[in-house]
Length: 559
Image (cartoon, rainbow, N blue to C red):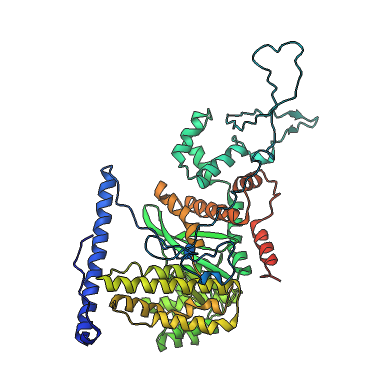
């Protein structure tokens, strides 16, 4: 990054309006310069990678969430303690000592393992006479056997006296295919869970003496998944029905050689993915419909149109020629055309309102909290913002002198302390504490520092006060979207490995299995066991939507 001399400190008495204006312009120019330098560095990194060299390392993400976690012994108010209890990191920010990772307690690692084979081994030297046998000393070895297993089913053929032929039936789990369920289970697990590409999977199977073609690999991965796709669709329907809060996120996803987007919707019980060519608010509302898309101009839709300042004439036309419910995108577009609503902006607002009305008409809960990183397409109904994304804006600012850096670090510390107290409030809600927390928010985000760009950032965050402090009204809310970002990380890995899908069926498989895999993990179900249960048709594992409903009932969300 280009270096620059720090700006000299200017006394408050010398900070005339003109000086303040010039300082603000200087900071903005330096900010633009910094962003351009970042872009140039990204291009340099790409060139370095193409040359086989290493790219410049990236900076660490925000540590606010981990840095405000209470210790195991601490109570709800311990998050306000600092100094010696929390320690100091390399940036001077207070943080707590790392907690012990779960699962590290000592245990007998092999006590519960099933024994498949028992071998007795005598000493390699002759045992002297009169020696006494003292029993056995067990030495357990875990191993894995991977080998081709080919079965020839000899189907009996009988001819009745009437000339009719009777034929033995293949097991239902084969589904008439020449490849067994265990092979398909392994292929699906490797491809969708371990991110093994189809060419590598084909090469691996051929090395294990599986006589299979490239086309058969593709058919086994993508064909016969309709039941799994239906179960994936039910995840969103049930998740939205039983949840009080969800988090959302999106990322890039290529399809048919073009850039697109994947949207994640979920919480602690489920994760649902859908990749499309857009990440607009219309797209998000269509995804929330979780199936048939309906357009309804009810009171909620009309209120939305007024809030979005739809002009009077198109609003009058929509009110004069209402249709209770319109099913399908094509029918809705034809309805707008018939009303003479041709402006792209007017059609967009009308479509968003009608989609929202249709969603509420279907029973979408008006109390459902949607937590996002602040992207505009998610800002509908009851919307909250991620604190981690909000805090990230402060350390990203470019300080021009020591005074700026001190103000930046002090403000960041105040935000961390407030965030820690909001987490404590979340664990033990006390309405009497809410006014004090709200007053602290006001004090932090309305203060005036010597750093003009920081002041603008704080002012921008202050405008979102209601969305950042919803936890004071709804303590069950999550304060960040780390869950969504963690869920979508696997999708990003898959994009980096294989680029994108070429067919709509391939995209559907990618979305479907990503949703089922992540949901299984959240519910504590082995994805390997789940695949085997569904492919072989045992159904000993209940539908995932039923398990989600059970978890919600146990949590007291669903009566």
